[in-house]
Image 1 (tube, protein in one colour):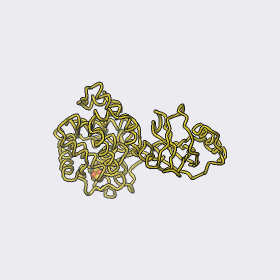
Image 2 (cartoon, protein in one colour; image 1 turned 60 degrees about the vertical axis):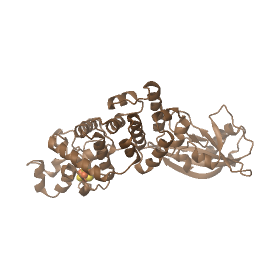
Image 3 (tube, helix red, strand yellow; image 1 turned 45 degrees about the vertical axis):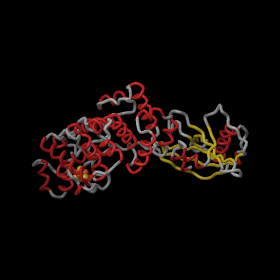
Image 4 (cartoon, protein in one colour; image 1 turned 135 degrees about the vertical axis):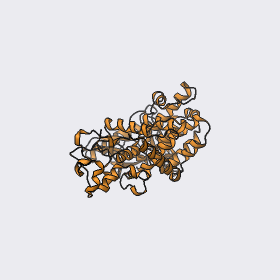
Amino acid sequence: PAPRHLFSDAAEVGAVRSALLAWYDSCKRELPWRALAANEPDVDRRAYAVWVSEVMLQQTQVATVIDYYNRWMQKWPTLQALAAASLEEVNELWAGLGYYSRGKRLQEAARKVVSELAGRMPRTAEELQKLLPGVGRYTAGAIASISYGQATGVVDGNVIRVLCRLRGIGADSSSPAVLDRLWDMANVLVDRSRPGDFNQALMELGATVCVPKAPLCEECPVKQHCHARRRRLAWGRPRCRSAYGPTATSALVFAGAGGCPLCPPATEPWDSSLGVTNFPRKAAKKQPRVARAATCVLERGGRRGAPRYLIVQRPSSGLLAGLWEFPSLPLAPGLQEEKQREMLAGHLQAWGGRPVAAGGLRYVGEVIHIFSHIHQTYVVYSLPVDEDVTLDAALSPSRWVTEEEFHASAVSTAMKKV
Ligand code: SF4
């Protein structure tokens, strides 16, 4: 790669480290896991707290995570407490955070630490990644740098954006070749004496200043080192292009001239209307799969107390594993409404133990929910049933719940919408 893409100048590395750390010290957000990591003397508990926060923060906004994190740490303050919990309890607390397998895997790994590692967390990023199921390179680096002070870098979505802009990297940022370079860069940059703070500073910069759509470049502590910003300022001022060499032209500066693997491809040169948000670039996302399901809210009673609703448990693997839902079944594309009702009535018969008339199902409406890779539509029906419906114990676990109990159960956000 062209040298401008790398951090090869020691003086510049030192300047970036100190600028970022000084900014972090004065601007960082006060977050509960940061307070715990800074004040907790027990290294295993510190690592556990960082681990929980990092797993929750994957794909989820900080503002949403805070409440979940506080409730989690209150309920399971140690690895041992989490290891002793049931999966049902974990799913209940996780409900609404999405990507439910994350909570399940966190608990499995905690059980492993307690049963196989004598309750002691592995002490390096390499060992964390090797020994704990579900702990990837990023989480391992975050735990090791923040809890143990290991000088190891981290690369997450925020770091990718900041580094690609700082170094003008316009090749596909999800490609292994670019990611390898970014990891190398993160490991070079990380401050040796304050690695945890440095990593958090880099991520914090991406979350609050170098944001995806409208970055606040003029407030940025490392703007002097930013190639994307320099490129934006140079646009329309040919004089400034000399910064990239006497023969550079605006088209060449950031296009893949000379076969550089980190430059934008020559077919997608700099777009002046995008400014610094020309970086990072990603290959087009795969379109989510479109899926439809019929779901029925069976309602029982109401005269002698609160109405109750039937929920059933999903299988223990696959999408939304182990969560509870109203009885549902997938629908083939283009199925007529009449057929849809018949199929749902047949499915419900199994739960009620008696025939269900398709005509008795009341159509309520449709609910759309976007999972990471599925665009799901639920066609919602309701059905009042008699008091004396008994559930077949041979089927998936099922139970009748009040509205309040429903909300406290391990149900997905999609079902809450239903
Ligand atoms: Fe991001 Fe702008 Fe800072 Fe560059 S100057 S790192 S684009 S916020």
